[in-house]
Image (cartoon, rainbow, N blue to C red; front, side, top):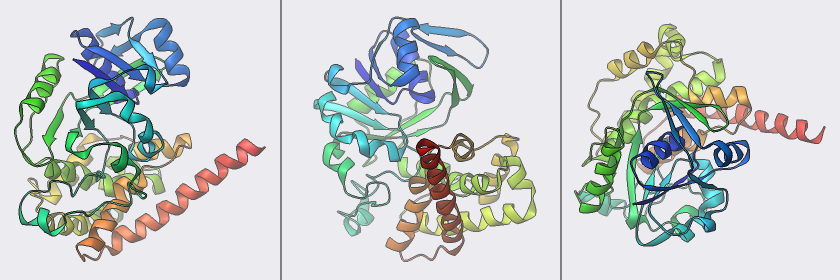
Length: 337
């Protein structure tokens, strides 16, 4: 099948190499030094065991209209990066194209096709924190969307070279929880490329399980420059994370989410990861925009929608928002000088 990966960085590049090597017609959308390196040398993937895979040649461009229509479009950009390029996405799509969203946090489509009585209650509700002007919803046919949860960790270690840290699971799910020939074919393609790709009949609960930790550990780490283990071992930050997670759990359960592990087990799992810097801390250190709305702001918004107080989440969000603003002001100052 024809597969276009929009934002072929650490995760997107990992997918691109493996899909290309299993015979799919892959096009990568990327820019800058990565684009130049891939055009010249192809895209290299270093697996967990050190084995090197090379997709060369592989189609790569920064201009979506050059890619043509696709069978599958995989969005591996962060949530705040989707809105600026949303208007270009229709050039990749025909009437049957499926769009797989791989953003962390609460997705813009969260309330679309929500099953059961909850779906009727919240029909037409949008998540403004991640799509404030409805731009993403305008340019992506939500009925073509497949939800996903990304479990692997990988990093771009140099232009055109990606190293897998751990993991190979990508859960997929139709928004209404159904099992369709389309999602089965895509899941099979993931499996043939070497990934675990279960089809979830409740993709929102999986999204929440990952978000449960991200909404607390990411901003706390950004504020303190502490690793996951540090946050979980220090009594004060462990309790703060737990309080944020308790607030989020109440929201999720009001929205029909099934939390399949206990809060304590989720925290212990994060501690077991060890001296790992969260993605938000890495963004702070590199001066990049923070993934704050999708991971934290969206949870506050859902709290307001479900009339659930979120005092701990609100406080951490306020502090991290100020940090994000100061980082961008500093970046702007550097550009001027």
